[in-house]
Length: 152
Ligand SMILES: [Cu+2]
Image 1: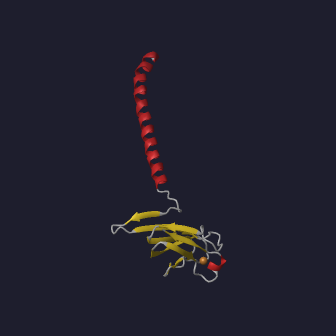
Image 2: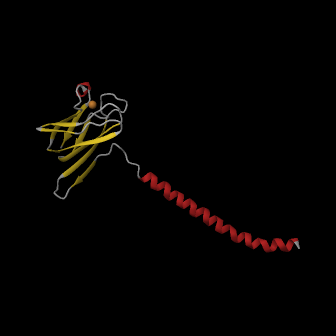
Image 3: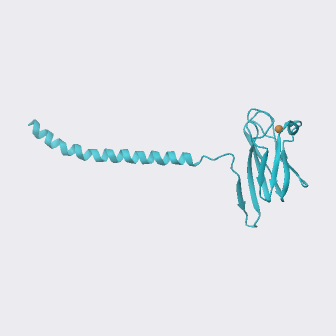
């Protein structure tokens, strides 16, 4: 009797196993897709993007960050762009307010003041040449919160 029972139950067990394996496999695939989806949204903050608009004009967007610890400096003193519409996007994680301005060759444009993780940007139509980007808060440029923007 016992032997017969095991003989009967065996096929049922072997049939159940592939289904369990299949379920585990599908779960693993779903997890992998979810993880890949999260990783895909990761973007570097130091990227510069260049696009050519329908009018043929170049647009450059440059990422700039103020020192997160409140030092009177940006994360770079040198930026480069192609002639055309140039945008500098400033991120300021510090609690002290900063902005970013572009000056030189008759251009004088500046962003809003930001602090505590806020972002702002300044845009200008620039021809080839050397420009200065700096913080307009009194004393900040003099303390070193400035850099050179080279447009070619
Ligand atoms: Cu500043």
